[in-house]
Length: 197
Image (cartoon, rainbow, N blue to C red):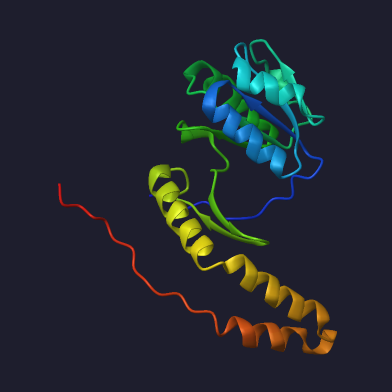
């Protein structure tokens, strides 16, 4: 069995990224990358109204309404193939590997160098869930459960409180105060598969 992917948080601010494809999956990836500060290029022969509207309303998204080409990888930090297109993955997968850039083809993992992580958020806190792209539905389901837990417990307020304590404490006391508060955090519950069918 292949080793699981290493989870890391990437700083995409100002970095060139490209998304290939149209439809809901491309829209989702464009929105996620944009939210994290990427400078985006979207290449698709059929963008549809939602992606066209996104491109028109964004200063950091350029839309090329055409078939993708290998030159679209020039100068790119990260590339996402959002369409399940065997010809495109056969073209871009080896090229991305040769260029050593981060590449993910949705549901076509043989050339991927990263997998998307399901993220639950509470303010600056982010909890990542990954199956290294092998069972994305499970990661997505657990992400939703974690997001509900964070929302229901108003955990963003807890994170903000700890952040305020950290920022107001003298440098010499920060670690001890944050560790003391963090030691009071509790998690209760269990995960299971309700498999009665």
